[in-house]
Image (tube, rainbow, N blue to C red; front, side, top):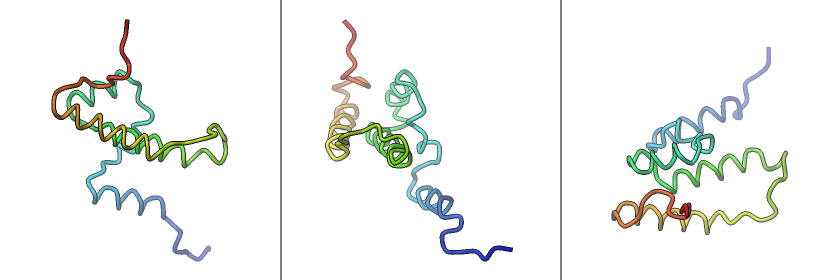
Length: 103
């Protein structure tokens, strides 16, 4: 029988910690959703652009060491842009995903 270490169940403790901070577990997987579903969730105020960005960057951090898909990541800039989008959404001046305009 193996002796338990402090790192046992570390991932579960992280999820428990985020739950305490009102970061529901399903938001951890926003990166899996498509743009139409995310747009709908933003419109209903079920999530925020910042939560989506955090979810995506969390996932990148989980897998980037294996896939090495990014040369440069601009996480801080992306989070600033997400906060600005959230402000515009909450003020009613913009619709979800303003960058995706169709012609």
